[in-house]
Image (cartoon, rainbow, N blue to C red; front, side, top):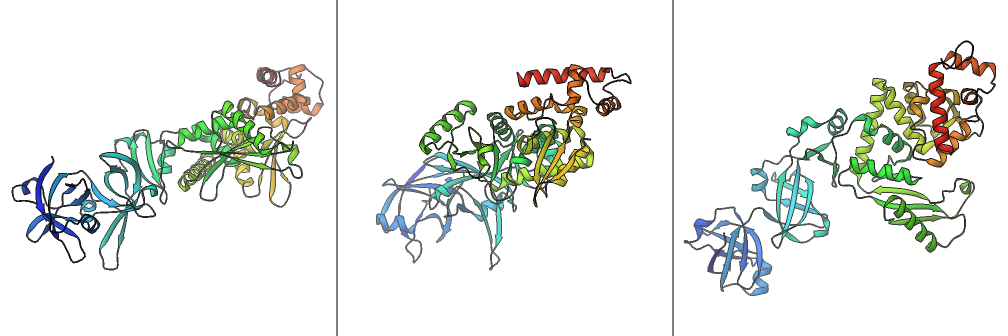
Length: 492
């Protein structure tokens, strides 16, 4: 309700702040400490709080408004109405200080999650999740503050704050993985399908409805091609299929994702940068549906021309520390679950995800797969391969680089688990792998009844693919059919 009256402006203090009293016939419309919008007769308005001064309820007028409009000693038409919220100035770092009475009334706690709404001209101009901080000053007084959007720095706005509870009825929808993730984080519920989590300042809204099986393959790919250090999250995609899948999974996990896209390209043909950017932007938009923000065009060096990617590599990046924290924690939890629970399916999904970034099929005749990684990551992958019950051989490339070779016979033994996942997002590499696999003697024996060495036949018999007469068993026939179907589909 808007209340209108005429009042004389007088001094509020020696610094030039103004003050007016609320007339006795209007005073029942307001209470001490109410936040109000005050509009003066010359269309000047501000937000303030009702105070008790000189035995009367009234309002302080900011010194700047008093001075600029020559209000001191004048009678002014004033319109006032109560507002839901409080007024605060946004500092240069985006910080806003909360009135102590409001903070105490809402019983804010340190690190509590809130939703802040900024209001300007009777409209909500911005909403942002933030985290309450409480600080005791030297004089033992307490300050309550949180961070808002720095774009509004030095502006005074009306704010409303809503608490976001940590525990609600929605808590029961948490999966074992999301429950374990949130245990180590400051968070608040946005809805049944969204939770806001905080690191230092900038939060992220995540989906809590995911299982281990939803993320095992994706986190394996992140293990190979994602950033795990620094202050921003990023992931690389070498194919259009990888890019679409990684974006789909990132958007599934991060509800407020706002990625930036960069193409890294080696200019082996010597084209002009302008032409390269035009072609790459067009094809990535057509094949993946994204608009590229930046380009990194490099000159070829050493062996880079042999690894040339015709369409470049897409770098998906978000500059939020909290995303890196979320991904690293999920990775840590998943690896721990795989190793402690000895979960073979999760282990295979994870390894196949790793292959998307760090796997290759280097031999044209042996049909094996090699996974390359640094010496710190190799022990983790070795343990996961043991859980997957896949045998391997460890290789040493140099001081820091190691490899894990999985032989063709070992791939055949686990083919029913691997067939739909090996290089599934890397068509060129998948095709090369199956072309090389079909040249392996054991595969020829299975699909063509090709003559093979005794030791290979003995090994196939030992693993149940053929009987003592070297005739294919039901298990061998199933493998044969799976091989033919995948080779024909991939190499056609």
